Image (cartoon, rainbow, N blue to C red; front, side, top):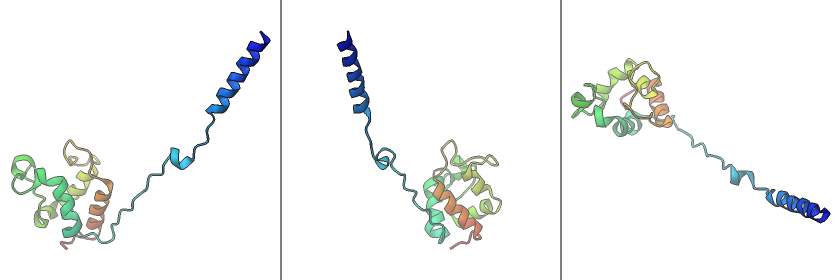
Amino acid sequence: MKNNKINYIAIVIVFVLSSCYYDKKDQIYPQVTNTACDTTNVTYAAVVAPIIASNCSNCHASSNANRSGAGIVLDNYTSMKPYVTNNMLLNSILQNGTVVPMPLNMPKIDACSIKKIAAWISKGAINN
């Protein structure tokens, strides 16, 4: 009986000690690299237009805006400017509840793209 108790304690000790394992923190919890979002040189032609084209053109290009985009055309600066001026563009991509969230029935566009558009707007939304 005493041997069984000693054997049992020995097994428990071996089990407990073998289950202790010291991993390196960075291997268990890898740090997510926070890539910087450069908003310093945002221009309409090089940055904003491609973001709008890749996220909004399915519905808001000139060719299909009347059919699927409520008549809102965003594929050129002149057509988009009124929606920038009245804050509808930014509020819709922020999906903040003040206007219809865009893209419609889709998740927000990525945060960096939103920051770039916001930076362009805050710098005057110039056609550059």
